[in-house]
Image 1 (tube, helix red, strand yellow):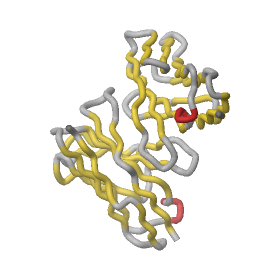
Image 2 (image 1 turned 120 degrees about the vertical axis):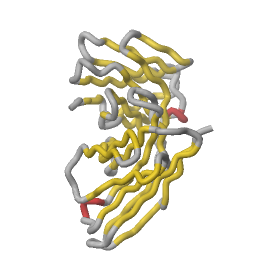
Image 3 (image 1 turned 135 degrees about the horizontal axis):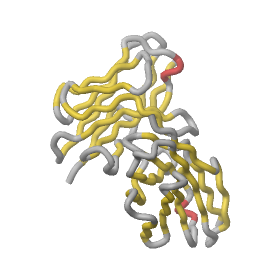
Image 4 (image 1 turned 180 degrees about the vertical axis):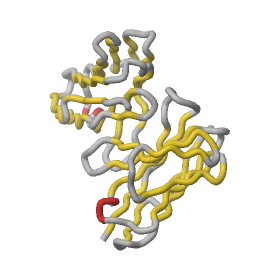
Length: 107
Length: 112
């Protein structure tokens, strides 16, 4: 099956700075790459996704980039705010998730 | 609109007792359904996956089982719980493969 690796496991940034989370995957047949945000004790929620026919997608302060050749994709959050603090998960394929990145945005 | 209900929200069970967690989806037909387990501070591990009534795929061998008796109902069961079964269990649905998954609120299961 697919193997998804996510880095870093924790990330601390100052409010207003950018945050970048990276994921790699193993199955070249994967063509759907979502990102989920999970606040403490709550359900994961989709924040952005990208398909293999697109290299980059942006939604306000959030962007995702995909490099199919290298089999890696990244989440970029600009102008971070305290409410961005949460655990972020990448996923690839049908149901393979990364191990999560705990983002802490310091006011 | 579509909604997903998962219950109970929390559960404390003794070792060796049975388990039944239920998940139902409303507002859609023939969804893909998923059961995940999330250990504290860890990622999501897929337990079971279903594309239709009575069709269950298991990703990880364990003492858990799943059933889909109706199109929008997904049940996670165990005959005898182990200490290692503690965790946060999440049910999810999607329209089809390679589409966003929508998660329930989860069940926090503690085994004593």
